Image (cartoon, rainbow, N blue to C red; front, side, top):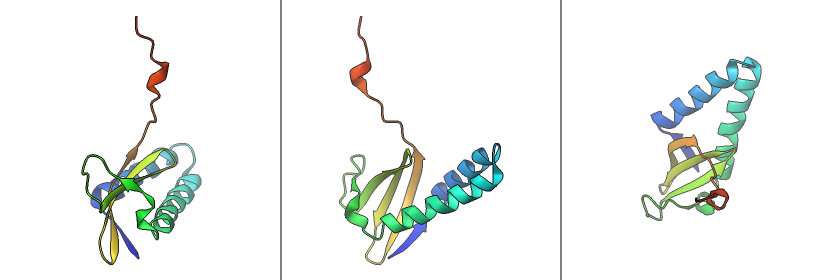
Length: 98
C-alpha cells in the first residue's frame, strides 16, 4: 500500500525537523526519517486507526504516534496523510472547580 503525504503534513515534518535541528541537527534528520518510516509501516494496516470523529467517515482515520495525531484517508490502492499535528492528551479529571 502506497502512503502519500499532503503538503500540510510535509510542512509539519519539516518544521519538526527544523525545531529539533536547533539542538541536534543529526538527530533531527534521523528522527524525522524514522517517523516517516514508522508511519508508513503502521499504515500497511490502514484500519488500525480509529475513525476520526470530526469527519465521521470510515475511510478517514487517525493514529497517535510519538505525541502526534496523524489523520489519514484510505483509498483503494493508497493512503493519504492529510494532517499531522502535536496532540496533547489532556486529563480533565485533574481540574479543580472552585
